[in-house]
Image (cartoon, rainbow, N blue to C red; front, top):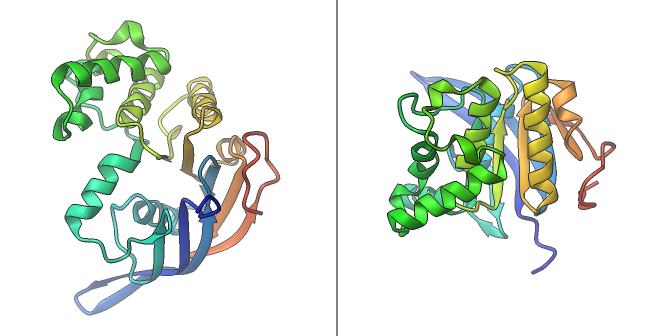
Length: 239
């Protein structure tokens, strides 16, 4: 159905049990995200925003409630099915880059494709296209530890793009960058959103969040506000 949200959470709760002690992190989160949105999940440390991103990206499971992806309840999928969804649908960009320091830029970007059906030549072609799209086509043979922080984050974005994901998750993508490099990365995420990618960014920084078209604020495991006052992009907003 064309009006089906890409992502739907319904009264999602998350708790962890350790040695008989239960720690509750999410207390009933409900929202929809539609394809083509640029959404910032914003909140202070300990608010539950990173746990929420891990659930949305199939890195963690909900304890109660329902998670629908493309209209299908994915709450009880097997680990293998979740791994396939991550591979086919999700691209991750992390604050710490998570690049292999002594591997080339090209090898870092081809790595996520190693478990798919593509031939080595097809992987290199995709990786080169992704690197060109983030302005690093001239850096393919450099080692990742020879790059600046901003360049390394752009390599991480290229790696996230390599499998043509439906959603790009960016977890504090500017946290290790100076202000200029951070702005460049945020502008790049904005351009990718303009090109049709759904972008979901976790941040505690107001300046970063304001690059998104929609801000969902999380505090103490609850959604406390959901606004689209910063609408400047594709015109697809939930509220």
